[in-house]
Length: 228
Image 1 (tube, rainbow, N blue to C red):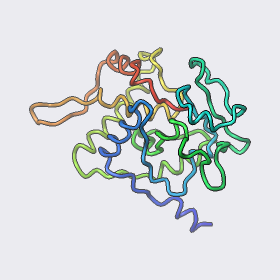
Image 2 (cartoon, rainbow, N blue to C red):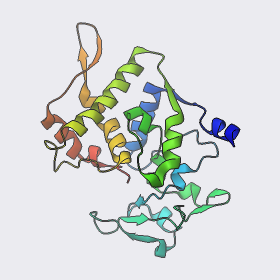
Image 3 (spheres, one colour):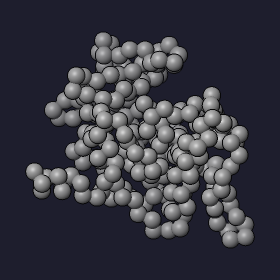
Image 4 (cartoon, helix red, strand yellow):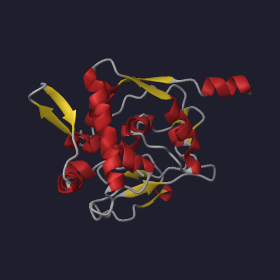
């Protein structure tokens, strides 16, 4: 058992940070056609951690493959938006012995889900029902081969810290309520924390005005893709 625990806690290569971040942004901002390429191996942590999966009304192929009794209206969203729940074990009901039974037609939320977003933003998964995700997230280790990797990493973490410290000023702008929302929002907002410095000819991390962050948070681009 000790040896198995050691293996399960071994670091995992998350990739070069700037390259990962660019791919994550493409997946989130592709209008539904994007997909995160995650080296999951045999990991099913995100499928077995009591997560509600959002499915939009335009995801017809996905909806056609999920029994209607497994879906219910998504609170706070327009009619047609639904959630796929989980069974008594916290498992997605579409997860079978061989993996996802609708993998080729899985929801957009699943296609863009990438647990590397948690270490990227410095966000800890503290929900007891999501311990498998927390354990997996802690294993990811990014590489920083160039200065841009570290600058962008700093900007993502600065974005999360800013939102946490200015919740009162950003009230009403869609302040995140869980770890996944926090981490994804930090990725979306990090560009607001970068400015090009002509003197040194590179980007530097800055602290923007709260109103600029609020505008970014309430834009359609900033609001799309926040999974719960």
